[in-house]
Amino acid sequence: MLRKAIGFSVIGLVASTSWAGTSPPAGTILFQDQMTNGGTWNVLDNGAGDNLTTFAYDYSANGIPEAPHSQGGDTATSGLKLESNLAIAGGDFMTLNPIGQNFTGVHQLRFDAWMNYQLTGGSTEFIGGGIGHDNTTADIASGAQIIATGEGGSSNDWRAFKSLSQPTQFFIPDAEMEAGTHQGSDPYYADFLPSVNGSVAGSPGFQWITFQVTTFNGLVEVAIEKPDGSQLAIVNYDCNDLSDGSNGCTTDGNISLFYADFFSSIAGDPANQFGIIDNVVVSTVPEPASLALLGLGGIAMLRRRR
Image 1 (cartoon, rainbow, N blue to C red):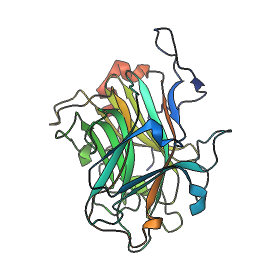
Image 2: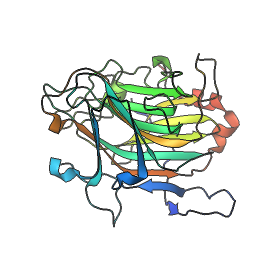
Image 3: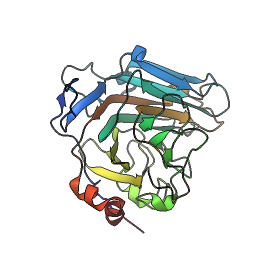
Image 4: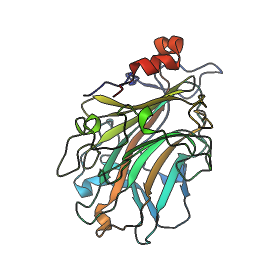
């Protein structure tokens, strides 16, 4: 069963940078980046020295088509290449933030992502990102974040987090996920992301997806989108809710992009094991009046439960 996400896709974005002290209108681009200049990004590494970022990477060299949200005038097939756990047998991860950025209030992060992996003898790696990041935490432990494996090699392929900062990482439990599980092989994910070119159904290997994280009044909606515009809700939760055992989270702060190989295995052919991120956009969105009135109860009624 597929479900359309609650629906905050931004249509007809208008770029602007100054509103003379007033709130920018809905649909305004607050930040956008084609991932061609590493000098405008801060890379937080877990310290193992086994991660690699390559900005302005021409991913057509790997036979990867243009990202779905590239615009006329963009450098074709150019984005950020992310690699982890290249030679040292140990878990590695990194978070990237745009330098000098801070986002508050109702806003939405979107970015195109592609995962490549070695079909046999590879290693399970994760890609994702989020909002409300503190600019200092390298691990997936700050703000509202989502990550996914490229090849379904984990018992928790789709992972969502609500955290203040280390060591208060809070892993959203199975029951709170829209699918009722983190496992990518579940039909909820697998029906939406069927196997492509030998990939594992339910994980975004060898295909473009767009991650979308939207916040309004502390509520967070996470969805993914295929190039045809269809969306799948991944999780909805309230950053201000502490009844789940978390310490809550904030949605104000910087955005984050995340890449990791948490496991000790090293791909036999590292050249084919990487992620690509392109077309990062932060924009304002119309606050959903119905959910503002209903509060988190509105989200609960819209959730798919098993």
